[in-house]
Length: 333
Image 1 (cartoon, helix red, strand yellow):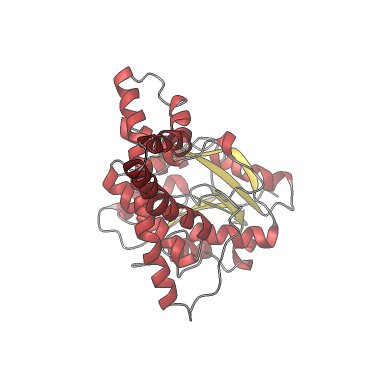
Image 2 (cartoon, one colour):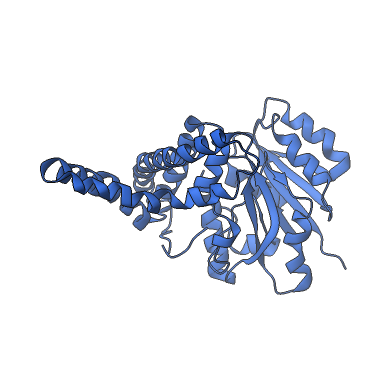
């Protein structure tokens, strides 16, 4: 008997971008048996768009006004009737073979429990191209045994979701990482399906990017994630950087050469990825994108340094209500 598959997502005021997801769901080579979307209280026509798509996609809307993304995902999964749950997000565009690729491991192996898909940047501007190159890894950089998928592109048995207690509803960001760690701890590494691709548009400007990474880092603090990474970032910007500047000013300007030496380490990955992305871009666009890479990296680091202590403070104030979630720093997304 064929496996029944439910695609789930959460939305909140996504009318401007939702059509991309709906159209790409209709175009899947392996159609979902049902689509369940949790709406968090949209007021912009999102629900009407979902209702219009219902006939083509066997789509149901679950209303949970005020729900955060974890609560929304849990509500959608609870309402889903499929044995396999494939999770994605509003605003993305799924490759036509996404669902077929992410479900295939379950069809090949009854013992498969969870599958990690992949996502790639879908830039519309030079800035977004630089953003994608700076912050998103490419598939050849992924170590499959350690990869923790974004919930833009992941699938698992509904029984797995039940066994690990669902998405952590006390977290508003980084909730998919905690869910991933719980799944991996109980069932082992995710099966990696690199062809199950979701196209994700990066943030369109620095302000939106700063807010995104501030919230991610605040989530890290709440969940007690990546202590070592954050400590290294503070040491780099608040200790090593100023000390090099001071040494150059008080002794020899040659100390400042360390900034140049450090550049490839901080920005090299972004520049290497960018070289594979710019395609038909003009020379001026290539130069602009390359100049954006260090700016985006530094702004992202500052956002993280500001958000992380806010999350830690939240965690300390709520310590009586949450468990320990310190994460193995060797893991990666």
